[in-house]
Every structure is written in structure tokens, then in C-alpha cells.
Image (cartoon, rainbow, N blue to C red; front, side, top):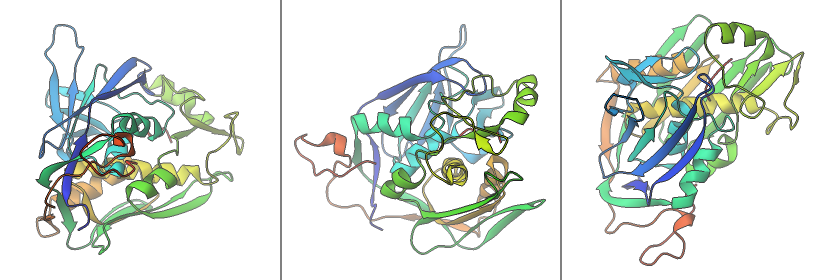
Length: 320
């Protein structure tokens, strides 16, 4: 395996914004972490309450209706985790502490791009520890009505194939397949924004969702057209965002996957169900470890010019 060593960030980096569902202001700070830490969320800023910590793990998912929510027995800790998780997994960041001072990660522009920009500012560094992968050994499939998702063995790394179908001429049937690597992730899916329909706004608001949604963070569809003044970033931006969400949701495996994920008419609920089905069957997966190289190598263009390392580029919530 070419990605032999674990990685983390060279320094801490932060973004601030509002939650798409809560509408509340929040700052998210990414901190470097030691090898074998994984991705850990820490909730701060709760008056009179201690900081809460939870590992990004499929068993920590408490809700998937309109976003992926992480929590524990004491309640939700972090809502709408999927975009920052997608950015971390898409760029190959293994170890990081994600600190948030509100109940939901900031939606930013509705994509993973602002999180990538924050990571690029500080860079990614390799650690003196072998990377561990979860290798899919046999197909695992979950069906939910007309939707289905499956994970199956794949010899060339991690691949996502998604197909969506909406009863809306603007969207209709769209599909996309990508091998998830940093450059491909940056180019093909990172900029794709979360989307929603104007017809659903009143229902979402009455249920306490989408309170922070706006044209600045959501692709809004009505009457077979997009209302956002700047239009779409891709002709098929909708399915590209579904792939982004899938990458983020599957990051909750706890280690990079070696396998192919296919989703048809899926979303957060299906992504989580398939991952849970895989991890619940010990005959369907195994841990494989890459042999470490002799020395660590800096792995982000933001670290260019720093002494002692070779460099290379480092390269939403769902309301529909």
C-alpha cells in the first residue's frame, strides 16, 4: 500500500460559522493528534458542564434523519459531522481532535471546501506509525424500500459509486463513481453543496431543522430551477454531494476503508446502516496494516519551504 504512514495536522486550524439546522454560531478547531488517536470530537462551551469527548465511530451515531449526529448515553454531542469527516478522510488525515463550542459543526458554504482550505493553511504531516485499514472481505448489502447500499471487496483502494433519482426534472437521475484519493476528492466532490427544496422549508422549520439554511450554504431548488444567484458548481452537483456525504459517513468506520461502496437512492440513514452491517459481521472485514517507510515525510503543499521534509499537495448536511 502506497499510503504507509499515519498522518495528522502540522498545527491547529479553525473555522467559524453557523449550524445549518440550529442556526447557532459555532467555532470548529482542528488540533493535531498523536498516532492511533483517530478522529475525536470534543464539545466545549457548555455553561456549568464539563467538556464532552467522543470518538468518531459508527456506534456513536444517534440520529441520521437530516444529518449525521454523534452522541452517547448523555445525549447528542455534535450534529452535522459529515462534511468535516469527509474533508479529513478525503485528504487522508488519520489523527485529529475536532473541538466545537456549539451543538453543530458550522455549515460554512454547504460543502467540504472550507474545511480543506483550513487544513491547507497548516498542512498535513506523516507520523512514525503504520496506517491501519479496514479491508472489506465479502459483500454486505442493506435494502430500504427502493433504496439500497452495499460494501464489497475492491482491489484498488476505496471507491464510491452513487446513484440518485428525484421526481424533479432539474435533478432526475444522476450517478457518479470515484476512487477516493486526495486529488480526486478535491476535484470531483469537495465543492459540492448540500441541497434542499423550497417546498420542504415550512415542514423543516416547524420540526426545528434548517433554521440556519440560506442561499449562502444550501443549493435551493424550486420550480425546476436553482434559486441561488450563482447557480450550480457542477451540472450534477446533487449526486456529487451525496458522494461527499457518503465519504464522511463511512469515515465512522474508524479507519480508512479498502472496498467499494455503492449507494442507490441513499442518504445518511442508509450509509450508517450499511457500515453497521459490515462492522457487525466479523467475517466481512479485517484489519490490515501498511508497512511503515523509514522516515516521516511532510505531506502538504502548505508545509513547502519548511526544513527537513519532502512536500506534496494536501489536498452536507442533508435537507433533501
